[in-house]
Image (tube, rainbow, N blue to C red; front, side, top):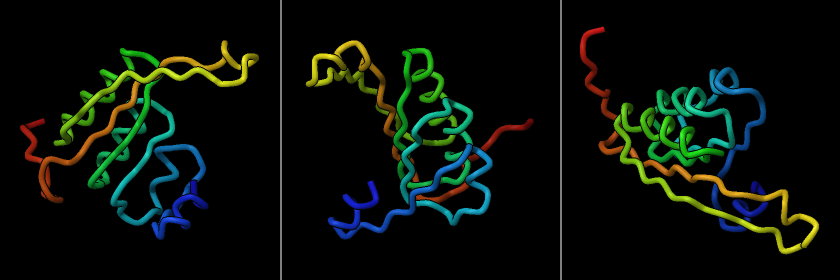
Length: 117
């Protein structure tokens, strides 16, 4: 991913580690792609208030949970069901459906009004 971004003149910081703890010492992000970890990790990212978040889920239930977390943090959520099949026949059984959950913050970096509690 870093090489492709550099070729297009995009500055990317790829971070490896276990979320949400790996997020603690990072600067405030503009865009985040969550590569796994479910709703807990997406919530930790959403609390950082990036402009965009893209995540994926391995089941409909997980996609719905991630969507609820994003909506609760003020993001407009769009879910899409994607399915892929490897071009190499031995890989046909190893790929499968997943759900993509892109979200865009509804308002600029304003604090989200929260009720009592």
